[in-house]
Image (cartoon, rainbow, N blue to C red; front, side):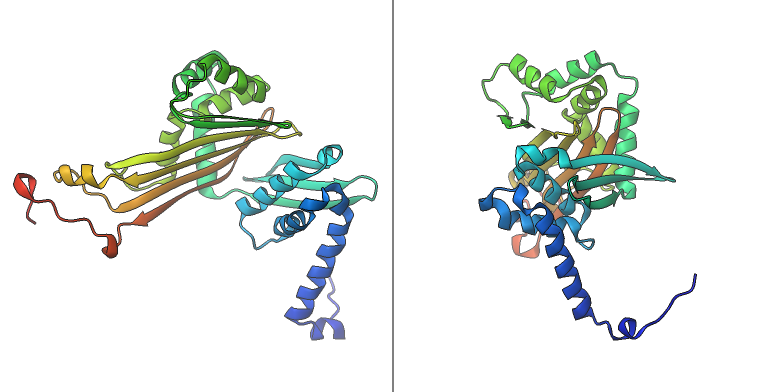
Length: 300
Protein backbone atom coordinates (compact mmCIF):
# COMPACT_ATOMS: atom_id res chain seq x y z
CA UNK A 1 0.00 0.00 0.00
CA UNK A 2 1.36 3.42 -0.95
CA UNK A 3 1.70 5.94 1.85
CA UNK A 4 1.52 9.59 0.90
CA UNK A 5 3.40 12.04 3.09
CA UNK A 6 1.94 15.51 3.04
CA UNK A 7 2.94 18.76 4.67
CA UNK A 8 0.17 18.34 7.24
CA UNK A 9 1.66 14.97 8.28
CA UNK A 10 5.07 16.53 8.84
CA UNK A 11 3.87 19.51 10.83
CA UNK A 12 1.54 17.61 13.14
CA UNK A 13 2.60 18.01 16.80
CA UNK A 14 1.55 16.19 19.99
CA UNK A 15 -0.38 19.28 21.08
CA UNK A 16 -2.33 19.43 17.81
CA UNK A 17 -3.11 15.71 18.05
CA UNK A 18 -4.31 16.18 21.63
CA UNK A 19 -6.48 19.08 20.52
CA UNK A 20 -7.96 16.97 17.73
CA UNK A 21 -8.66 14.18 20.25
CA UNK A 22 -10.48 16.59 22.58
CA UNK A 23 -12.54 17.95 19.68
CA UNK A 24 -13.46 14.43 18.58
CA UNK A 25 -14.37 13.45 22.13
CA UNK A 26 -16.59 16.51 22.56
CA UNK A 27 -18.33 15.74 19.28
CA UNK A 28 -19.01 12.16 20.39
CA UNK A 29 -20.16 13.30 23.81
CA UNK A 30 -22.69 15.65 22.21
CA UNK A 31 -24.30 12.59 20.62
CA UNK A 32 -25.27 11.08 23.98
CA UNK A 33 -25.27 13.97 26.47
CA UNK A 34 -29.05 14.28 26.60
CA UNK A 35 -29.37 10.63 27.62
CA UNK A 36 -28.26 11.55 31.14
CA UNK A 37 -29.94 13.62 33.88
CA UNK A 38 -28.66 17.20 33.96
CA UNK A 39 -27.15 16.79 37.42
CA UNK A 40 -25.08 13.80 36.24
CA UNK A 41 -23.91 15.12 32.87
CA UNK A 42 -20.59 16.51 34.09
CA UNK A 43 -19.66 13.20 35.74
CA UNK A 44 -20.96 11.26 32.75
CA UNK A 45 -18.73 13.25 30.40
CA UNK A 46 -15.67 12.32 32.49
CA UNK A 47 -16.72 8.66 32.49
CA UNK A 48 -17.21 8.76 28.72
CA UNK A 49 -13.71 10.19 28.31
CA UNK A 50 -12.27 7.41 30.51
CA UNK A 51 -14.22 4.80 28.54
CA UNK A 52 -12.68 5.92 25.24
CA UNK A 53 -9.15 6.59 26.52
CA UNK A 54 -6.97 3.70 25.32
CA UNK A 55 -4.17 4.37 27.83
CA UNK A 56 -6.51 3.87 30.80
CA UNK A 57 -6.46 0.43 32.45
CA UNK A 58 -8.94 -2.20 31.30
CA UNK A 59 -10.84 -2.33 34.57
CA UNK A 60 -11.16 1.48 34.82
CA UNK A 61 -12.60 1.65 31.30
CA UNK A 62 -15.07 -1.05 32.26
CA UNK A 63 -16.04 0.79 35.47
CA UNK A 64 -16.66 3.91 33.38
CA UNK A 65 -18.97 1.91 31.09
CA UNK A 66 -20.89 0.53 34.09
CA UNK A 67 -21.20 4.00 35.65
CA UNK A 68 -22.64 5.37 32.41
CA UNK A 69 -25.04 2.44 32.17
CA UNK A 70 -26.17 2.83 35.79
CA UNK A 71 -27.02 6.51 35.34
CA UNK A 72 -28.35 6.72 31.80
CA UNK A 73 -32.10 7.25 31.34
CA UNK A 74 -34.15 4.03 31.28
CA UNK A 75 -35.17 4.49 27.64
CA UNK A 76 -31.50 4.55 26.57
CA UNK A 77 -30.16 1.52 28.46
CA UNK A 78 -30.72 -0.70 25.43
CA UNK A 79 -28.10 1.38 23.59
CA UNK A 80 -25.38 -0.20 25.77
CA UNK A 81 -24.25 -3.72 24.91
CA UNK A 82 -21.68 -6.30 26.01
CA UNK A 83 -20.46 -9.20 23.88
CA UNK A 84 -17.57 -11.67 23.73
CA UNK A 85 -15.38 -12.61 20.80
CA UNK A 86 -12.76 -15.25 20.10
CA UNK A 87 -9.79 -13.80 18.20
CA UNK A 88 -7.44 -16.70 17.50
CA UNK A 89 -6.13 -17.90 20.85
CA UNK A 90 -7.23 -14.70 22.56
CA UNK A 91 -10.67 -13.73 23.78
CA UNK A 92 -11.93 -10.19 24.08
CA UNK A 93 -14.89 -8.36 25.57
CA UNK A 94 -16.63 -5.82 23.36
CA UNK A 95 -18.37 -2.84 24.96
CA UNK A 96 -20.54 -0.71 22.69
CA UNK A 97 -22.58 2.46 23.03
CA UNK A 98 -24.77 3.22 20.01
CA UNK A 99 -27.26 5.87 18.97
CA UNK A 100 -29.55 4.17 16.43
CA UNK A 101 -31.09 7.43 15.26
CA UNK A 102 -27.73 8.88 14.12
CA UNK A 103 -25.68 5.71 13.43
CA UNK A 104 -23.28 6.84 16.17
CA UNK A 105 -21.19 4.09 17.79
CA UNK A 106 -18.53 4.19 20.53
CA UNK A 107 -16.75 0.84 20.69
CA UNK A 108 -13.88 -0.59 22.71
CA UNK A 109 -12.50 -4.12 22.85
CA UNK A 110 -10.89 -5.29 26.11
CA UNK A 111 -8.46 -8.21 26.04
CA UNK A 112 -7.46 -10.65 28.77
CA UNK A 113 -4.10 -11.07 30.43
CA UNK A 114 -2.60 -14.52 31.01
CA UNK A 115 -3.59 -14.62 34.69
CA UNK A 116 -7.19 -13.77 33.85
CA UNK A 117 -7.24 -16.58 31.29
CA UNK A 118 -5.87 -19.10 33.81
CA UNK A 119 -8.35 -18.09 36.50
CA UNK A 120 -11.26 -18.26 34.06
CA UNK A 121 -10.22 -21.73 32.86
CA UNK A 122 -9.90 -23.01 36.43
CA UNK A 123 -13.38 -21.78 37.35
CA UNK A 124 -14.84 -23.44 34.23
CA UNK A 125 -12.96 -26.65 35.04
CA UNK A 126 -14.46 -26.72 38.54
CA UNK A 127 -18.03 -26.03 37.38
CA UNK A 128 -18.43 -27.93 34.10
CA UNK A 129 -19.56 -31.22 35.65
CA UNK A 130 -21.40 -29.66 38.61
CA UNK A 131 -25.20 -29.60 38.59
CA UNK A 132 -27.16 -26.50 39.54
CA UNK A 133 -28.45 -28.35 42.62
CA UNK A 134 -24.95 -29.24 43.82
CA UNK A 135 -23.71 -25.69 43.22
CA UNK A 136 -26.66 -24.29 45.16
CA UNK A 137 -26.03 -26.73 48.02
CA UNK A 138 -22.44 -25.50 48.41
CA UNK A 139 -23.42 -21.85 48.01
CA UNK A 140 -26.07 -22.27 50.70
CA UNK A 141 -23.37 -23.17 53.25
CA UNK A 142 -21.33 -20.02 52.55
CA UNK A 143 -23.93 -17.32 51.89
CA UNK A 144 -24.15 -16.35 55.60
CA UNK A 145 -20.39 -15.97 56.05
CA UNK A 146 -19.59 -12.93 53.92
CA UNK A 147 -21.00 -9.71 52.46
CA UNK A 148 -23.08 -9.90 49.28
CA UNK A 149 -24.61 -7.24 47.07
CA UNK A 150 -27.22 -8.01 44.40
CA UNK A 151 -28.34 -5.41 41.89
CA UNK A 152 -30.85 -5.65 39.07
CA UNK A 153 -32.95 -2.91 37.48
CA UNK A 154 -33.61 -0.32 40.17
CA UNK A 155 -33.24 -2.86 43.00
CA UNK A 156 -30.19 -3.18 45.24
CA UNK A 157 -30.08 -5.64 48.14
CA UNK A 158 -27.15 -6.15 50.52
CA UNK A 159 -26.47 -8.96 52.99
CA UNK A 160 -23.82 -8.91 55.70
CA UNK A 161 -22.03 -11.64 57.57
CA UNK A 162 -23.87 -12.47 60.77
CA UNK A 163 -27.07 -10.64 59.91
CA UNK A 164 -30.42 -12.14 60.91
CA UNK A 165 -31.88 -12.28 57.41
CA UNK A 166 -33.33 -15.75 56.66
CA UNK A 167 -31.10 -17.86 54.44
CA UNK A 168 -34.02 -18.75 52.13
CA UNK A 169 -34.55 -15.06 51.36
CA UNK A 170 -30.88 -14.73 50.44
CA UNK A 171 -31.13 -17.74 48.13
CA UNK A 172 -34.32 -16.40 46.51
CA UNK A 173 -32.54 -13.09 45.84
CA UNK A 174 -29.65 -14.87 44.14
CA UNK A 175 -32.09 -16.87 42.00
CA UNK A 176 -33.70 -13.62 40.84
CA UNK A 177 -30.37 -12.33 39.52
CA UNK A 178 -28.98 -15.62 38.16
CA UNK A 179 -31.36 -16.13 35.25
CA UNK A 180 -30.40 -19.47 33.63
CA UNK A 181 -28.63 -22.69 34.60
CA UNK A 182 -25.24 -21.63 33.22
CA UNK A 183 -25.27 -18.38 35.19
CA UNK A 184 -26.45 -20.18 38.31
CA UNK A 185 -23.63 -22.73 38.20
CA UNK A 186 -21.01 -20.05 37.58
CA UNK A 187 -22.32 -17.47 40.04
CA UNK A 188 -22.98 -19.92 42.87
CA UNK A 189 -19.37 -21.06 42.54
CA UNK A 190 -17.96 -17.52 42.30
CA UNK A 191 -20.01 -16.57 45.35
CA UNK A 192 -18.60 -19.19 47.70
CA UNK A 193 -15.33 -19.61 49.53
CA UNK A 194 -14.03 -22.32 47.19
CA UNK A 195 -13.49 -19.59 44.61
CA UNK A 196 -11.01 -17.89 46.96
CA UNK A 197 -8.83 -20.98 46.79
CA UNK A 198 -8.84 -20.88 42.98
CA UNK A 199 -8.04 -17.19 43.02
CA UNK A 200 -5.07 -17.55 45.37
CA UNK A 201 -3.78 -20.60 43.49
CA UNK A 202 -3.64 -18.71 40.18
CA UNK A 203 -2.79 -15.16 41.26
CA UNK A 204 -0.53 -15.57 44.29
CA UNK A 205 2.71 -17.50 43.76
CA UNK A 206 3.80 -17.03 47.39
CA UNK A 207 2.73 -19.26 50.30
CA UNK A 208 -0.38 -18.00 52.06
CA UNK A 209 0.24 -15.75 55.04
CA UNK A 210 -0.62 -17.61 58.25
CA UNK A 211 -1.55 -14.73 60.52
CA UNK A 212 -3.81 -12.55 58.37
CA UNK A 213 -7.43 -11.97 59.28
CA UNK A 214 -10.20 -10.95 56.90
CA UNK A 215 -11.43 -7.39 57.42
CA UNK A 216 -13.72 -7.57 54.42
CA UNK A 217 -14.88 -10.18 51.92
CA UNK A 218 -17.52 -9.02 49.49
CA UNK A 219 -19.19 -10.54 46.45
CA UNK A 220 -21.15 -8.21 44.18
CA UNK A 221 -23.54 -9.35 41.43
CA UNK A 222 -25.05 -6.81 39.02
CA UNK A 223 -27.53 -8.02 36.39
CA UNK A 224 -27.15 -5.65 33.42
CA UNK A 225 -30.01 -4.88 31.05
CA UNK A 226 -28.29 -6.97 28.38
CA UNK A 227 -28.73 -10.06 30.58
CA UNK A 228 -25.00 -10.20 31.35
CA UNK A 229 -24.05 -10.44 35.02
CA UNK A 230 -21.17 -8.28 36.20
CA UNK A 231 -19.49 -9.97 39.18
CA UNK A 232 -16.87 -8.38 41.41
CA UNK A 233 -14.99 -9.98 44.28
CA UNK A 234 -12.95 -8.07 46.87
CA UNK A 235 -11.10 -9.39 49.87
CA UNK A 236 -9.03 -7.32 52.28
CA UNK A 237 -6.84 -8.97 54.93
CA UNK A 238 -4.62 -7.50 57.61
CA UNK A 239 -1.82 -8.97 59.70
CA UNK A 240 -2.84 -10.06 63.19
CA UNK A 241 0.40 -9.05 64.90
CA UNK A 242 -0.56 -10.52 68.26
CA UNK A 243 -1.03 -14.02 66.82
CA UNK A 244 2.23 -13.78 64.85
CA UNK A 245 4.15 -12.83 68.00
CA UNK A 246 2.58 -15.66 69.96
CA UNK A 247 3.62 -18.23 67.33
CA UNK A 248 7.26 -17.48 66.44
CA UNK A 249 7.88 -21.10 65.44
CA UNK A 250 5.72 -20.60 62.33
CA UNK A 251 6.85 -18.91 59.13
CA UNK A 252 6.70 -15.22 59.92
CA UNK A 253 4.63 -12.86 57.74
CA UNK A 254 6.05 -10.46 55.16
CA UNK A 255 3.00 -8.27 54.53
CA UNK A 256 0.91 -5.88 56.58
CA UNK A 257 -2.13 -5.99 54.30
CA UNK A 258 -3.19 -8.03 51.26
CA UNK A 259 -6.00 -7.04 48.91
CA UNK A 260 -7.56 -9.39 46.34
CA UNK A 261 -9.72 -8.17 43.47
CA UNK A 262 -11.37 -9.79 40.47
CA UNK A 263 -14.03 -8.91 37.90
CA UNK A 264 -16.00 -11.42 35.82
CA UNK A 265 -18.73 -11.12 33.20
CA UNK A 266 -21.22 -13.98 32.89
CA UNK A 267 -23.59 -14.11 29.92
CA UNK A 268 -26.24 -16.77 29.27
CA UNK A 269 -23.55 -19.17 28.01
CA UNK A 270 -20.16 -17.52 28.49
CA UNK A 271 -17.78 -16.72 31.34
CA UNK A 272 -15.18 -13.98 30.93
CA UNK A 273 -12.58 -12.93 33.51
CA UNK A 274 -11.91 -9.25 32.89
CA UNK A 275 -9.54 -8.52 35.76
CA UNK A 276 -7.64 -10.29 38.54
CA UNK A 277 -5.08 -8.74 40.85
CA UNK A 278 -3.48 -8.95 44.26
CA UNK A 279 -1.94 -5.97 46.09
CA UNK A 280 0.41 -6.52 49.02
CA UNK A 281 1.73 -3.94 51.47
CA UNK A 282 5.06 -5.06 52.99
CA UNK A 283 5.76 -4.68 56.68
CA UNK A 284 7.80 -1.49 56.54
CA UNK A 285 10.76 -0.69 58.75
CA UNK A 286 8.76 2.17 60.21
CA UNK A 287 6.17 -0.40 61.28
CA UNK A 288 8.53 -3.17 62.30
CA UNK A 289 7.01 -5.55 64.80
CA UNK A 290 8.81 -6.09 68.12
CA UNK A 291 10.83 -9.30 68.32
CA UNK A 292 9.23 -12.04 70.43
CA UNK A 293 10.65 -12.52 73.92
CA UNK A 294 10.38 -15.11 76.68
CA UNK A 295 10.34 -18.90 76.43
CA UNK A 296 9.23 -18.86 72.78
CA UNK A 297 12.04 -16.59 71.62
CA UNK A 298 14.11 -18.07 68.80
CA UNK A 299 17.58 -16.57 68.38
CA UNK A 300 18.91 -16.66 64.83
